[in-house]
Image 1 (tube, rainbow, N blue to C red):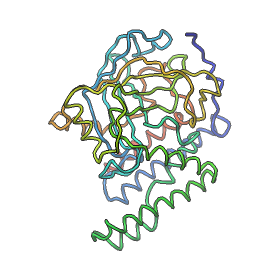
Image 2 (image 1 turned 90 degrees about the vertical axis):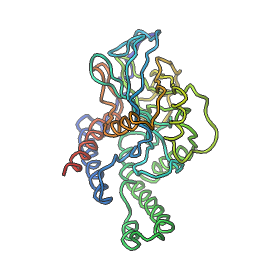
Image 3 (image 1 turned 180 degrees about the horizontal axis):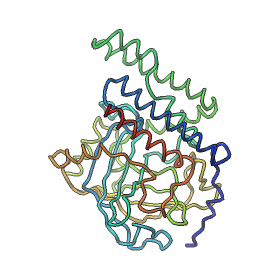
Image 4 (image 1 turned 60 degrees about the vertical axis):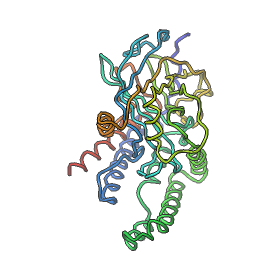
Length: 359
């Protein structure tokens, strides 16, 4: 297959220049840092991630296996045909609130850290929705900020009801509604009614899709990365058949039951850049219209997530900060405004959490 770097011609910077985009991203980082700290102060507890707050499973007994027929133009850094590396996997709900039941509407995410025998560890980050709700980093950040924190009504009701049981059964419904209304208002003010409507419709449709099992979910990167001269999006495609039914209250328990019986395996695939229309670099909304090319597998080894080792692994993984810019060698470069913003925003989020926890 002919290698092309024509995708580089599709790079467009927010605000029209590298300098303007950098100003925006620095402001994004400042905003997310404030959200993490303010959220911890509101809850009077330790800081949590503004997204993917609830870990469903933290796994250290995993392997990233590269296929024997890996294309020559993808053999870069640790991506070498036939190699097998240990991996760390974090599966999570996408929301910024830790809810008791996983049956509530949400997206799911997976972060995979590959541990090569040379170079740096390498992170792959994916979500179980192929199309992004936002077209660029501006819309993505506006959505995060719009629905971060609590409304004034939430704070008033919590102060009034305190620990009264009526608050949990009735007032919580009112506060959830108030938070959603406040978030929608903030989003409309940030991006305008048209884009806000698209974002809300996309998220609503994606979040209500049932997830009977994490083992049968497909996860997409949604933002591209350059592997050498080749721009790709990547994905995890389950080898298990798609389950039917509703989302269980505990996706952790469902996955744990499977892993006690045997390994859970996903195909690791890439989709190559073709042209600006069918595989856009800067617009994250559309799914890429290019073939899925399997280049390896992610294997969650048979294990007991509830034994001492499993509990220890879970606690360890929850301390990690994953970032798409955590790459094996400089030959891997995340591209598109979504990724360029993630570099500083993810670092700011992790740093704010550490600073607040140590304060």
